[in-house]
Image 1: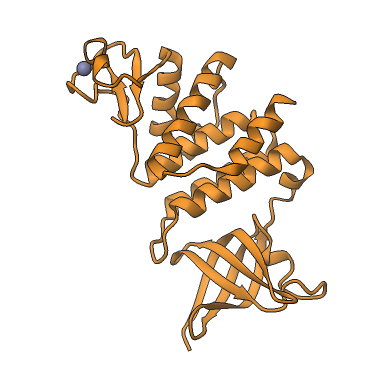
Image 2: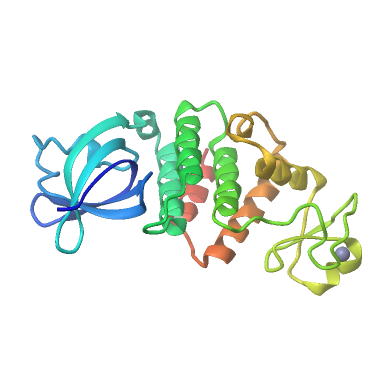
Length: 250
Ligand SMILES: [Zn+2]
């Protein structure tokens, strides 16, 4: 019987039958996998804590006929503070949806897992505006998944300029003044917003959450990153709409 020992983060849980669950885990060893957790919904089950969304655990799994089954789980971190606030909780759930969308089976991505754990920790800590935390996560996830926007050279003429007034989502990066006509849907971008994207893309984990932006830049950054994510992942995230709705009340 094939066995797998791996660290992993629970992205999603779905109730099955009377007391079982199917969980989606982003694992260190094999990327995204689906695991059946027998009896995990029974109150006294030893699987209760380790099969909830955001649980980061040491898992031991064994391969059944068609899918992985949970054999043992030891919780490392639950990010419990995320559950104290509906807004923060929704932001965390959106992160899990984003990771589930870009995550692939049999394709481990350690950078992506580390980034996600670090971002969840920052989100749970509450030091930084959750909106900014999400934008940082979005640009970084896209970049780690092969969709790095071009922010140094014009995507059309290839020239490096001091000032790029436009960002084209379909072209995947900045446009100079001379080339802005090639995409009528190109969005105006402030130098501060462009600098912020560049900073996010080029920073390592430690420096990633060490900055603040003006409300104007955060607003533009949000519009741009959500459009970028939606376009390249070809998906509308319902949780994101919910977060926006909640956000206006905050
Ligand atoms: Zn150009």
